[in-house]
Amino acid sequence: MKTIVLNNRPEGKPTLSNFEFVEVDKTLNISEGEILLETAYVSVDPYLRGRMSDAKSYVPPFKLNQPVHSGVVAKVLESKNEKFKVGDYVSGMLNWSTQQVSDGEGLNKVDPEKAPLSTYLGVLGMTGLTAYLGLTEIGKPNKGETIVVSGAAGAVGSVVGQIAKILGLRVIGIAGTDEKIEMLKSKFGFDEGINYNTTKDMKSAIAEAAPNGVDVYFDNVGGPISDAVLFSINQFARIIICGAISVYNETELPTSLSVQPFLVKNSALMQGFIVSNYAEKFPEAIQKLAGWLNEGKLTYTETIVDGFDNIPQAFIDLFEGKNKGKMIVKI
Ligand code: NDP
Image (cartoon, rainbow, N blue to C red; front, side):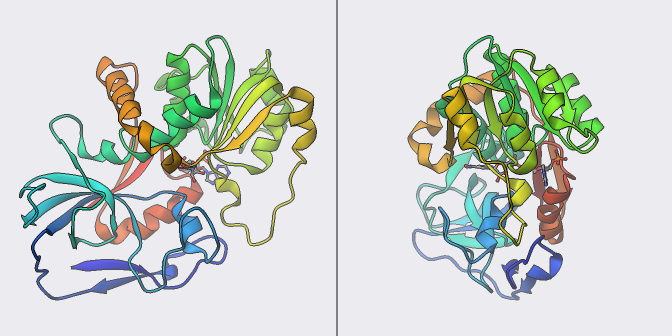
């Protein structure tokens, strides 16, 4: 059994030396009420960076020398819990371990017949829920409006853009390579795409792509990209602050635009979003997402990395934009 623990806290960008592999050469035994799990797929997510720092947040920091955990799909190898039988697949927050014992608390059964197992970590999992609930609960999108999505080619962003298209909006995506921009338009149906790495004047590029202004901004990245979007917001615009990956590795507090004048002038709303605050809406949201998937209105892409030992590198690669869609490690 192998486990990955947090060896030390990253300073700036995470590196492989922040993690340590611990091998345990013993058979895991289960007690009454427990199950033995074998990990099948591991989700690596930008928000895990926050948990690696010793700072107050909406979830407590990871403890040093303890296993890192994230969304995992695992197979039940042994069961002494009546809710789970051998061969079932479950998803939930589990350790970065090849095998582990659980009491089943917080785990949901997932059905490989209904959808590929990896999708329960992506479009039918936490990132799909984030896209749907962030957009509908805070974005309150209306047909005919214009939305800008940053981090558009990633797990959350690619689903946000497609849902916005389903709801009849004009969709502009911002991402880091021409290949990603091409994918946004050809695979996900975005109307426009802007490569922030090759565009010198983001303010003008956004204004040009959104001639009627921006009604909804789904912000996954923060920083200068988001500053540039503010210059194009319309009256009563809604800005969903979902993430700020561009600043997660900053060691100094970044300076950025003062947002208040933009919000006041446009009577705009800017609100932070945390998916777990909407747990009572998960069943309804999953039903919507699964329905659209089945109807072929929604599609997804995944970057699947092979092998348990590559989990830390896959996580680090999120900050280099190496993924398209959901980054997942197959064990
Ligand atoms: P992604 O699949 O979008 O992967 C991260 C992407 O971020 C990379 O592919 C890269 O794409 C982009 N990126 C990396 N560094 C930068 C940078 N400096 N500036 C701009 N873009 C950058 O991740 P997710 O879809 O899982 O998450 C997207 C955001 O949503 C994150 O900020 C995450 O923390 C947040 N989130 C928040 C949740 C909540 O409940 N609030 C839940 C889930 C996610 P590119 O090539 O385009 O640069």
